[in-house]
Amino acid sequence: MPSHTPVDPTHGHVVAESPTALKVAGNEALQAGDSVRASHMYTLALDLLLERRPASSLTAADWFGLEASSEGVLSTLLSNRSLALLRQGDYAGAADDAERCCQANPGWAKAHLRLLAAHEAGKAPETEVLSAMRRGLRACPTSSQLREALAKAEAQQELDAMLRRGAARETHPAAASTVPAAAAESEAVSEEAAVAAQLELTRRAADDPADPRRFIAAGDIGAALAVGAHGVPKDVVLAEGYLRVAADGGDVVSMRNLGHLLLQMQRLGEAAAAFERAAAAGDEDSAGVLAGMREEAQRRTKSARDELARLAAMGNPQAVAMLEQLRQQQIGLVA
Image (cartoon, helix red, strand yellow):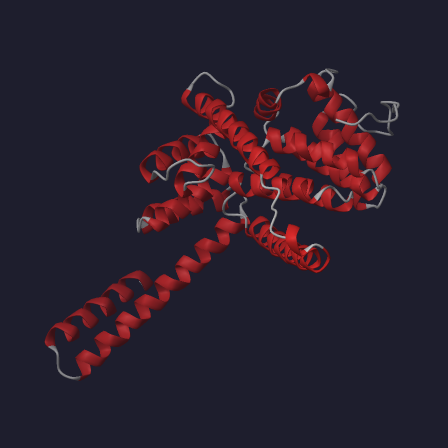
């Protein structure tokens, strides 16, 4: 985490002992266009959560655990300070905060998008940007923003490579076929090993009822199993179990992911219940899916009723009886 100018902990009427109050003050400053004051407020809040421990001494597991104990406040502070630093032109600091945010809450797409924004603004190497995108999409396989960003970047990379190969053929025809693949292959192997180690750490936390990180970890493992991400074989049965653990622990993203999984399994009633739970917790995406499910149900009901009416008009006695039954049910509901 970047170092910042020391700040006097007395800022008007802000309660300097409350990370949440400092976060609110930082948000107000950021909305008012004062990114410097905002980053100072977020720094004070983070110092309280970290208990003055140097950020450089914390591992990915430490950030993950602190996120659970802070009930999600840590990742929000890191994300918001990353944005504040980005607006100040401190791209390295913004990337550092975003990286910590990804470690604290790996299943939060916004954390990976913050890292992507910082890398792009800071003109980071193409390989670093692509690596961040791929890691983000593995952690958040349902993020359309990350998927679109990666597709665009890979298309641009391929176009640039084609142009370079064309230029090489014009200047050095004999050497144009040489492809420096060793470095890329080594980087890919190293990245896969790191992902595998992080997955094993996450799985252990998810399987340990005494681990305070259990619910968040269960949500991450469940999401990976649901789609076969991170090299994990797809297993919808295991995915459902982990996602239910996380959802029961109050993880809203897992409630939504559970709804999508159940929807794919054609368990519509259970899927609707999962989306309702997430929507009640404030998840707008789940509310949108739920509205779409209701519209589809209404469309199918109308289509079935229209077909019954058509058959009844042709003298089908069963259709006539069913329409009358539906009419009586409607009268009972109104009464």
